[in-house]
Amino acid sequence: MLEIFILVIHVVAAAGLIGLVLLQHGKGADMGAAFGSGASGSLFGSSGSANFLSRTTAVLAAVFFLTSMGLTYVTGHKPQSTSVMEGHKPEQPAAPAQTPPQTPPAKPAQTAPAAPADSKNNEIPK
Image (cartoon, rainbow, N blue to C red; front, side, top):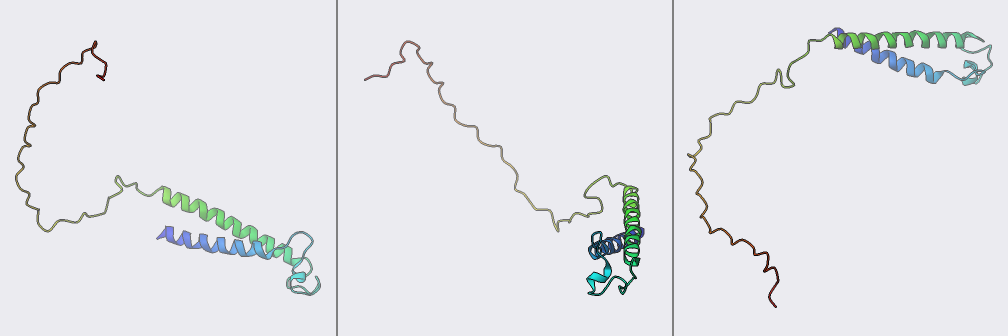
């Protein structure tokens, strides 16, 4: 339950962090330029947008970092299972299949051993 709670906060912080980074502009740009008005008439004031967005980004980055560490701790301290198939119940067959009795395989017929090759007679007759 704790893992799911931390994971939800982690995803929300990640989405917020992405949104805030995309909202921010490079140095020299201000929030008023994005809305088509002067810097003094912007949403957060002349210098308030940079402070608000950067501080909010820093807070969300800290939350993201802490939830990452928390998820690592929570999942690392779970009891380890001994088997991959633990908790999986194999299906039981309805009835064991009847197999016919096994007969031993027939022995192959014995053949005469091949004559040894003659080292002097290696030529092919013409």
